[in-house]
Amino acid sequence: MSAAATRVAVVGCGVFGRNHARVYRQLQHEGVGIEFVGVVDTDSQRARSLAAEFGTQSIASIGDLRGKIDAASVAVPTSHHLSVGRELMESGSDVLVEKPLASTLEEADELMAVASKTGRIAQVGHLERFNPAVKATVPLVTLPMFFEVHRLSVFTPRSLDVDVIMDLMIHDLDVVLSLVKSPVREIRAVGLPVISDKVDIANVRIEFETGCVANFTASRVSTEKVRKLRFFQPHEYISIDYGRQDVISIRVDEAAAAALLRGETPAAGLGPAPGIAINRPKVETREPLRTEIEAFINSVRSRRNPEVSLKDGRAALALALEINQAIVKHHNRAGLGGIT
Image (cartoon, rainbow, N blue to C red; front, side):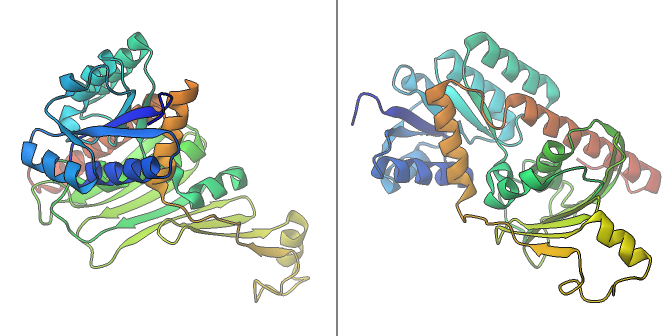
């Protein structure tokens, strides 16, 4: 392995950690300057199994990585992000921390302070920012005023340490925050536990200071998998299918819109109607996790700020926590009892 290779490790060998390990192994095999040093987990058997699967080492502890790696993915339970992230950064490693950034804003702030003090690169794993459909949409955004977002998943026993807001909806909160770029004015939310002891399904309405309104629905007890985001801005409707990595834009120019209102052109039939364009921006299908990890490695090598910073992760976490508080208040008003 070349001395110039970026040395990486994965801390946490659960579902997310396994996916990070798979991508690092792929990059190493492709000869793009990655050395996959090893994996760490408190469950030594799980670490050995993952290491064997991807042809790397099982490392006993984070301390044993000191001086042996340049960067690491942090894929441990959210409650351990601060302790693991701090130890890695203080030992000289850059970090890619899975979402949500932390359990509390205080923990997020401490992670930010450690990154600043140590000068380490720290990226948050908000995966959908690296979805090719989202990247293709960013140049189309002008003044979004209404979002309708659905993220539905069948139940799995993973990530039960957090509720559906932190597990699923936070992806969309991060994407919408990155597109709207406005403070939040008002939040209304309802959520219910269905299978677990935490909120498994939720609906949220957020109004931003710009006047933009966003409706979010997230469920991890659905019979189908849906990951869609749709929004309207002046004279344009844009629809993103995260899963298919597909974008559709329907746009009406101002002159055509005025003519339609005057009844001068037929309103029926979007395709043939003058001045109405249906566009499918070119989207190069790619695995978002791989793009995310490549972006992280590029930041490690260039020492440039990551595409999704700790500040971004904190903003999404802060909004998710506000939503949780709104759900608790709604529960209390409805007399439904306490929720965790």
